[in-house]
Length: 453
Image (cartoon, helix red, strand yellow):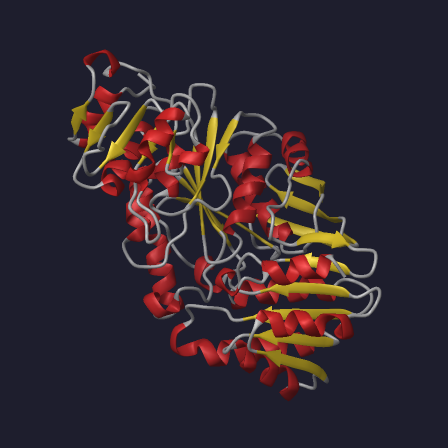
């Protein structure tokens, strides 16, 4: 039984069905939390947010075709059935767990400090050469997004790739209990959420909670170039990937075709084969290796893996390249931590011409924040960044590190508007311009302004 009805939802969640008896057996397909996303047959999950209460939009959801609502308080004048539970978030996770267990298809979980979304998209592209794949949309990788994604499974899906993002101890256990991955890709252990997790060892402990929710037949696909992951024993079969030749899947002859593509050879147990990644960024080689390892684990051939990687498409805000006719913009504004910024600067350094880095605060770095920002500035200077433009309180330390290591041209601003006003005089025709900061710094608006220059 791979479907849900209001009655089943009530039974699974321990909730109370409210509505006409004739609607108890209505088939429910998929779940959403935003009434604007409702499609006919969906379950609308009423979640109380900081700015809005989903219960207020229940009748709008019914009007858009929702078959049922999940609610934690009675819905006045409801025009459709709903299931009343103590907590919609808890009930959503319970329902996601139940529904996931109805499927015996291979499920790939993706986690790590940096590159989760790229690895998720790459694994989905690779598997897509052989299977019909459900993947986490955008970055819905938390305790709301994961069960919503799982509830999107249907009988046409032959595999799933689910991204899992965490910020505290215990969160991975809650996610993995729903996902139950057969394969887990772990990209790296980096400087993220240090305020909650303390240090890199804490990050590893938090991420590795996932392995307790894998069966003995599970496979851990781990970045063997990462110092902590290299020697870690996940208690399941381990397949390593990376640039180092000691990895089960490693890359050789890595080269770029400007901002259009990255080419390399993958060397593994299925031989040597050349791949072309149709996107910008040398960091995507690691994503391709992890996707190839996952595909190989599921019995895919080299030709299928090559074809899948060729179908990869980057997600908006993650190293998207735009030639404005004046400069080349590398919009990596979605998020940032020290590992991802270093990787972005390395990819920038591989391009010809003059390099400009527009960098902002990297958040949730705890007591190491100042030193980590300073180190990024030093690395930018060492990477040959000709002009550094920063915004944010902590970003002042990026400028300090840049100047201390020989960087000449640098500016620091406290607001995006001040930075944007400076851009026309700071950028030169033909520049390659990287834009990167933590998401809440709203650097997407800076990237949008650059596109208009």
